Image (cartoon, rainbow, N blue to C red):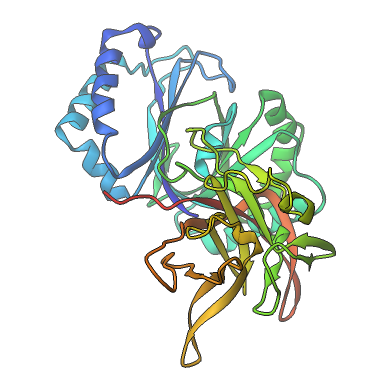
Length: 413
């Protein structure tokens, strides 16, 4: 999942938080972030010295937009232009060590979930600045190779929570020169974890490994950031486990809850979860026991309406209500199948064994009457810090493990 992320650093006056100008900025800010094109925004304030010895108080900004054009349009709106004027009254560009300048840039960041990074206690930004004529594909390939080697050797430092990486959109000015910038933004549980990750000679070794690209590298640590707008990308989503923990079912596999081999273990063909009721951007779920003993108990057959069932059928993940809309029977006892027309597979269905009613897993519609099954959205995201071995035609290679996320389908409008 690649996101367009705007990153910014603004040096501000010591009375920034108490200034009436700041209050006016925040009032205008609440109007600007009402734009439907702004997915999420975060802000953190850091005093002089701070995590990386910055000589002035500063504001760290991060925003996820649907496009650069949308971000520019918001800034050129009447409220955006007025807010920009007010920022000029609270910016402080002088410091004991010389002039400091505000900095902002747009980046295409992928490889993880930016909302998780921004929600961390400490955010580390590592920028690699390359000449404008550098081979960016070769640089990224070398960087990815180094990351895979680090992961396979168990070199991922404790305290790492999430990370994203990617190139600047267009060129940036770094120390007076135009550059291409490759930005890595990682989230950590504490400043001590960051120091352990980049301390000693680790930075020097990293730069030595990439010296053929004539890079200049700078690291910057930001404090915990407040979420001014919950990411709509994450609203309602929750993780149901790694993709590798789900058996891949076929048409002849019997009911969904039967045990199958998954890697070297026997596991049910589906998982069932209580849908979380919390309203946070990243929610937690509780898995439901669907073993034969649990199925026979009253506890299992209690209120199924807030339960979601997730399974993989012929390589594709599906998430649906656990409760049959006709009989209120648990569909984990059902059987998946291909919906075909003259031998052409059109969709996937599931049959409830209680009355043999079937439901289309694309539309939720039943094969009779007007009963409709709740169908959920499914995403596969890179699992942070996890690498698995997969077979390809010419041998084996390493690829990021995927994590399965689900949420109820969102209403439009």
